[in-house]
Length: 549
Figure 1 (cartoon, rainbow, N blue to C red):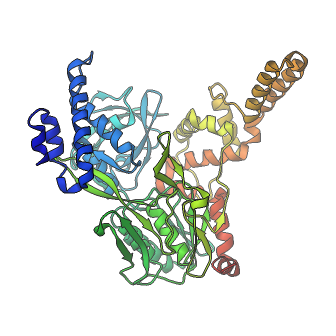
Figure 2 (cartoon, helix red, strand yellow; figure 1 turned 90 degrees about the horizontal axis):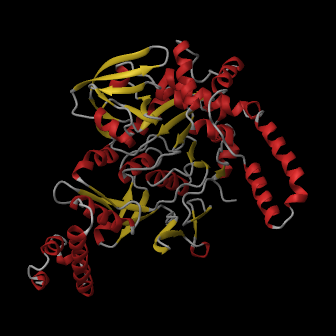
Figure 3 (cartoon, helix red, strand yellow; figure 1 turned 90 degrees about the vertical axis):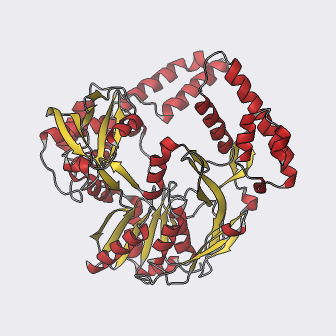
């Protein structure tokens, strides 16, 4: 055997290589693999024995593994035994903890948004609560993942959480951890005009069942049209994507074909169950963060002419990963196939087999192909899922970005909650001019500097003028422009009043209505939702979008 050639010169090489399995390699690869494994062992030996500072073998090898996998694609990852819980959550959506998102501001971590009916909410925690201690241990200076480790634990165990709440001071909360199963459908309801809205945030087990149940419930309450929101949904389990498509299309429809290196990776996935409704008008919302399983759902329903897609081009991930167990309770997720949706197109945007300076490049326009949907509409591969009705992505002003970055909206909402016991329902709540005035007063002594694009352009102009020896002639005019810009920026709070009010509404509503509030408060300024309503309320418009132009 090949291993005998190494004798016992480098036992690390023997251990590494013996675990790889000879059948995994082509004969031509044997020498290249054995040579490089021996080189790796030599490098490791020299670093371990000669490096000026003490090295940690586990960390060194892990860095080597990460570097190797990073050269492939971002989705092929190794998980150590310590990361098993993290990976399990990615796959199942289940963990043991308190059921709340958190965020770090300055030296402390704060409660961001407790999930309904889980320990954080049951204990009365609110968005904006500052986490001071966990079981007497200070959380000052700790990162979010470090605090998360303290909050997670075995289901049924209890701990004391010391928090600080604006207007109430320091409070102690006793919390009992539970098994947390995050819902895939975070919200569903009828908003207006008999339009049902389903917000899907994940593709963990039961995602298809949750969408099915949501649709049945909406129909029972009078929904005659449906919007499925896949924005910012990064995907998950492939079979759950099939199940979700199955809610809207007949049994036996081909949804995805996967193709890989081995025969077992070449599979055709079809719908297996009876659908809930194959006729109800359906709109799907997507954006640049809709990826993977989200693209299978949106792409398949587009290819089958079963839904109208609204929003922005999706992320463009056409790769399939398989989980593999390794020694010592470690595991890895490895890309094993590419998937093709019903029209036959591969929506992968980046070519990881063709890198420039270590970075994958986009599929060239010349390599993209045109395909046809069931009705004969043109669609293109190599660039994610293209919406049938494009809507420009919402962008915030530089002022708003600065306020968000400095957590001033979040901090003001904390103060507001301390002096207001209740507010209106999310669908009707609006920030008044009085509240906006209070916000301006709140930030009047706070730091939130920002640079506008005009200021950047002016700086470039000044530099160019100096380079070309025109600065002396233009200095007076440039100074006037700078002063004018400063004066205008002082009015930015009023100029961007509508935008800032919407952002304030989101932060304030969160503190009273949690997950439901986060969804419902956004409807009044949601451009994609507005377009969906317009199309669904015009049957001719909806039908024409699914026809060949």
